[in-house]
Length: 242
Image 1 (cartoon, rainbow, N blue to C red):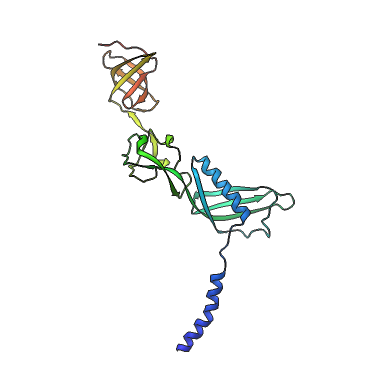
Image 2 (cartoon, rainbow, N blue to C red):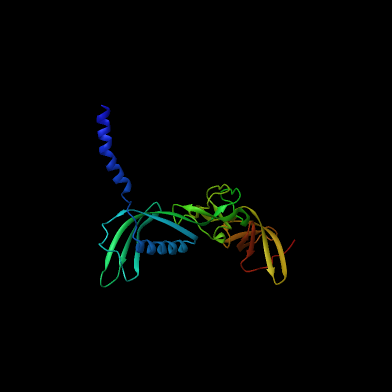
């Protein structure tokens, strides 16, 4: 029995060695370079800075006998929803040797993105002190941003803990004025600034136009939201003071 086991082991060892030495399919160097450049451009278009990609071939069509191309390669994205499995088409426009090649790749992607530096409650305006930039892995190129200014002043529909990536799909305009809330009506004319009190009749975010009732005059005005519980009259009308 021992000899029989030894015989089978001796027969299987060459097969295992052959499998171990069989190189995993690799992405052609020219295609890989063109794809790297394409992915960096896509990341920049999505406001992602310092994007990095490590690519590995998952499979695809049988490649042409030669992937050499004297003309610049064109890369078209067929499916980029998840970096773990993306499909592309490489096209060589060389008149003498044109070809197309569809393939699947896995990209280990990372970029410098906005993360929470402090606990952020849902629906609360995000302050500059709440966030910072850090290099992080990404499973989607459209899920985050490197622009702090795109996040500050917005609110997240989900609460965030320190270190969490601020996901752009959960951002929305922060509500700075709520219906029925007491607001400050700020009027600026040159170097003169006069404040009065009002009641918001509508809810709104930064820059939105809402109706506000001046509590001293009883008049309803159109005002632009200028900050938290603060509005500025659209016509800059100077209301009467008590």
